[in-house]
Length: 561
Image (cartoon, rainbow, N blue to C red; front, side, top):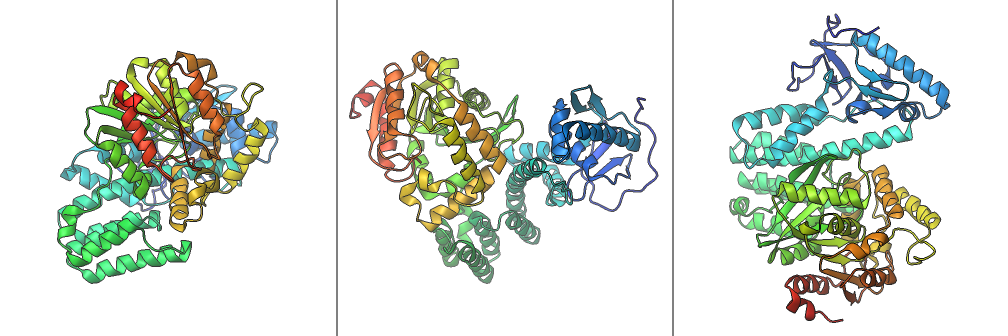
């Protein structure tokens, strides 16, 4: 029986900070902290953990979700028929409890009914993205941001554990995405409060920021800056010592050179540092059909250069690594350099992250639209080259040229393509990589020249943890295994430079050579070295080749064959 959403449950909602709400829906789903469903200011009595799990999962997945998937997600140990029966009972129990038709259903799919439920975490994400992208905070935005932070600092779906690995992985993924967005908002709010002289509130939020990631050095630098603004040399010293102790205990290393430099400058001149503080990239969000894509622009050249990353990326953490920042700064002397986190990775939305060359090409196109860039050079590395080539085929007018590094045309071996792992061997490697999530996974393959550097290992481990969940890594790299751009190579008409290091352990040298042979007019640039990461090892030849090639025919002729 279909019920209209009227009436109220006579149970007062327990004391909790109220998030900004809309009056245009019947139910509020609270997923910050211990979950709750609220109707007309009163909490609906739901005691089933799977009820909250189902509502939250559907809220974060707009559109119909297969019942078979939901049944397996919620009851992984039951057979399909039993799990689907339990799902039907759960839906019935939920609708009886809320006295409202809450689902759109058919035999095979399930979705939340349109306009019935609003979720606090989704409202927070909408607000935070707009706030982070704004040039300055006005009073209303600052007030609303502080109200949101009071709720958003609590863990998502606290206490909801179902013994389901798939559900736990999904919850971890959305939690990581939420924490990244919360961290960006916290930084903006802390900055605004410090400029207003509200240092006590700013310091409190700086501790909240540190709690999200106790190994993130820029957060300690920010804490030192807040003490420096007040002339508290003891506070600066305490924050630096705390950072050093944490890194030494966990990784056996001290703070990085940027943190050391900031600390020394603050001890020399506390007041002067605020106007010369470490510059963080201004992150923007391009909206696409698949969700928000995070990107930033560095430099002010006439031409744009989009850097298409490999399987993981995180804009902010990547730029904390001095070799990457130095390379990007060198490119930014000529170009407007666009860095982005592809869908499903880093600060971009994690949901519905299809890992295909076409999906990556759509991400690049959405960024160009949002940045109002009609066309750009594309610098693709590793798996990112596939999306760059796809865009050059699909939208040739938007691609001024291609610079490809460590690239391949197909993700796994075929009878006529022996320069990649066979699919079965690839899957074994992938499982080993995913099992190592949380540490410096794959560094012996991607950067063997730096695998013994403790600072690089710690930085890479942190980037991977923040860039993707274990399930996210598997989705991205499974997409690479199945990708094949060989039928399209002959259609690439953009000027193309193909660079490859002879000792690359991740992508064989012959794969790059094959690519250069199959793309019409491509310039082949073999390089010395063993590192697959373009910025590792000797990166100067890479930067020089890109700058020379993009300068035009004269520059291309200057590149050695």
